[in-house]
Image (cartoon, rainbow, N blue to C red; front, side):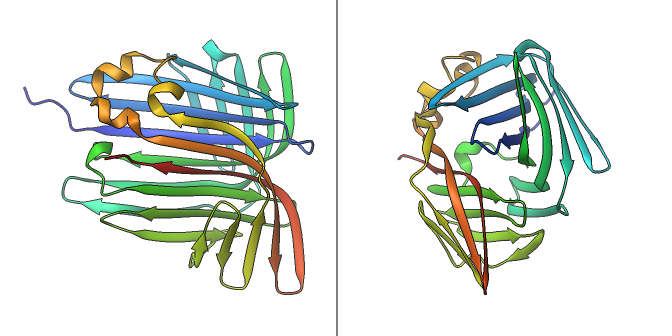
Length: 259
């Protein structure tokens, strides 16, 4: 019997309080070589300290209209994300071997979240990424991704660089051109997002940021995949558009594939 093709469905949902406390919830279903694996993780940061906990166990994510509910029993996480901006879906990369589909369900959310004994309430963001091609075959050398959310505005961006390159942004639920992207500034038509140096949430190779908690993944994938470097920050951002501006929180990252 032929093994099923590679499939990864990965949820990303976050919340940042007014004071800048952060919780990022990851959930994933991985299917490959006849193996199905349920992965979940929560990254939290408060008062200059951060922690990450991960597990291989079942989780629950349900979408009902404008609401997303998440339950990660092993990690003590429950949350509700309520959409406050229209969704957007797009194929980022497509090839005969598979594709990468980005579904930004909630560019801006109202979030109520519990992580252990902590309760967080604030603005957030939620997306679902569907990948049907093994990651080490993607024509990708560097990826910049991020999201800015304020009470007035939302902005999300993808900057994919490699043998295949593409970039686009989502401004208040509408797709637009990504003019430029860096650690400190995102430019789209008629608007710029200025990003401060922020607080590092995660930095290092995947072998040091993911494998220690879920070593079983290391047995499935080539070791070269875990030499990928990831740097993620929570920063303060100011979006300036025409004659107005808004201030909010930014979660952004740069991921680099090594030869």
